[in-house]
Length: 442
Image (cartoon, rainbow, N blue to C red; front, side, top):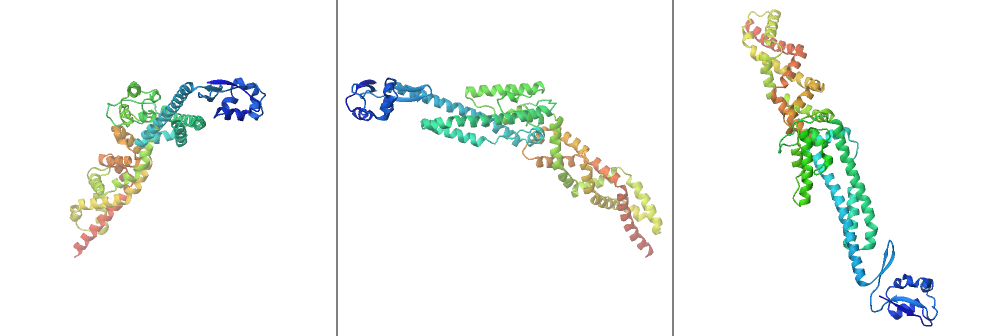
């Protein structure tokens, strides 16, 4: 690999390189045997006759490699072996970074899917989680892409320049993801105190407690701290089972499937209150719309007349008696005969006048509506699955007005507005009485 050249008069670095066709002067300058004449060689000075200069063997190849431990000179076989080792380390470094990035992306995407698919998770977490969603993903992906391209191209300078920034960017992104999800988990642990009745496989996830604190598939951090044995066991099994599936090269369970397996049926604490609060926020207009429809009001009119909170037959009789005396009508037969129609019209007009305002006031008080929402959600946890809280609220309002639970609200409206109901009743009785009086005078 090396030979020793003895200089002749007039020899310099340039003449030696030209004579022996040395392509890389660094091989001469960096050899330790030439340390004593390094300055003269580098300066291009004429070397004294008989100076010993170690140079690459013209019949072989010498490779100069700069490493952290210093400059190394290698023959072709050694250099190829060295390159193989370098390439393996480059590939390993990129592979580990890709693993780290993919891991962070997977956790990030899984939690986003949980939040998107179950609107109430975000509603609960937003109450207490102050850790923002990671914003450094694109930067991490871009940094990794640069390092990966340099690695594939075996561009050593570019790789050296990009690998460390990529590691820093991915580490930052990964830490942000971990902190974000930890915030979600802590939010759930801090607000949900009860989790009961883990449902069988296949049930759509509806328990706020389960979905709020479950981290993405395969992560032990997803085990629900302080929860019932059923939920904790379910998450532990699914987590390690998925790790095993990945290691075996089989397809892991989906996020949806894991969530279904960990579903529960209880609402509790601040998280439960958050779900109720969100539904309540959207439900009011839908309830008013359904409760003021013609069909709904017709049914309420019939019910109020036949089985309402006030004895309308007694009220009607009393009003008829007053009206007869006031107008001087000889017979009440027509008013008695028209009782059903008069009461129906009067109650209908009364409800049209007071229902909307009274409902808004009644629903705004909160307690009754809170109880109804809680009952509705816990009756079937599938009701709060989905992406749109407004649609959930609309479904609640529809079920509520069809359930008969609104009867008590309308009974309260009737009792609270008794004077207005009597005024409407009196108005209709008078209209019929005036017609009857006109007939009698004729």
